[in-house]
Length: 115
Length: 130
Image (cartoon, rainbow over all chains, first blue to last red; front, side):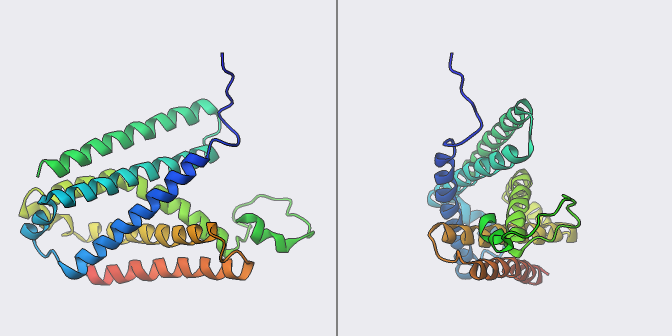
């Protein structure tokens, strides 16, 4: 029987690193998008669709989405740790967030690779 | 962050109330809470953005409809603000992790810049969309 206290110090370093690394990846993707909007200027539906039909763009967008979901997890966990007080409530909400993030990830994958 | 901003208050008597309407937050605290609020908003927006993304790739009609109505444009401006604020305040936090800008005056200035820059960028995008 392990009596692990799930609040307190030393459980945050990995989350902190994930948050920082994913933040940098998301920023790079936003910069890539700025470049696309300025240089390629997708102006209509055909160009918009063509932009996402290449495998490279799909993979880069997918990596961005994975970063976004991981980043969301750390952020939502921080928020829940601050405001969702009874541990049982917090745990239930954390499970809900994880389920939502995994579902959104699957949905995103389906959108990208059904093109 | 808080330690740096409240250090100047020193031995001054602490307020006895915790009335959120009467507490005047310092600028870095405002940048910080807006960073949290914008992050939460962006989280809530993920499924709607995914849906819009899916629609935009389906047909030319759906592509036109996604940014067609004014309400969607207003939402996009709101989301753009959230993104820009989260981005700028986040870059500020990452830079502060790496040391520079920890002095109170610098922290205040960078917080102010992040808040204003996000509003300016969101309004610029709004002007571009309209």
